[in-house]
Image 1 (cartoon, one colour):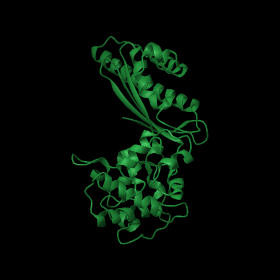
Image 2 (cartoon, one colour; image 1 turned 60 degrees about the horizontal axis):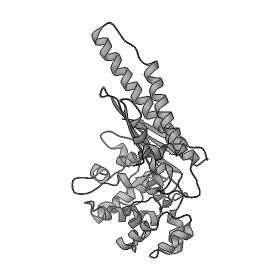
Image 3 (tube, helix red, strand yellow; image 1 turned 135 degrees about the vertical axis):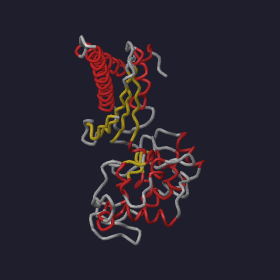
Image 4 (cartoon, one colour; image 1 turned 120 degrees about the vertical axis):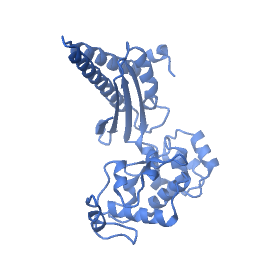
Length: 323
């Protein structure tokens, strides 16, 4: 973890500390109030502390946006300031008198974009389909070959624009409208990863995992365009790129990160042809997830998750959830 002395020499770290500290102190002043009634006092304090926790967490999202705005976009890797957000947050928390703030920025482009299973013309993307199947195998998810093939067909039908089932395992409106709680087949891209739970054949244990295996939720995303950042991808996602990539290949790739260009990455991707690599990977990222938790001395606690997209150059929040 970065020390406060080291962090003080980092202008971005100082800005982050000032943002968080100033917002926390400001909200403490403007929200401080009291009441003559005992119950009202307790309710007022609870409301005040919950609101303070919210503003502190929201300040963390703003700080994350500032880090991503100042980031060098020529490449994105775990050696950059945005990837050290948890260290900045911990140091900032040490300067707050009572409140505790923790946070982390992760790269959404390090994951498999579920929407990429269908091409822009509506046809299935076989390369991405095989990648998702490999991920299920790598995670040792308890699913048969027939079950995963049917699930893939249903995902394709959920994403593609037509109303015709892809195969026997597929599903369109006729299936979903016949459910006890009917809904329509979307026939377009998913907006969140949780949406996959609506797809025929998708079980909660496949998504969240069990005591015996991990689910796919940590390894999938939406809205990235499909290419995976080799600088930030996990071991599991890297192995899902090709049947020919083994543990030794993954260790070699990870040992030589970060890569500043696709050409540099190709030198390490010995087991994959150049055409496959160019289609599957990148060294840049445009979408990130920030998760921040703000806790007050009274016990008030708030978790905030935001997805930040910087495709247009300026980071903007495209998803915002308070837990």
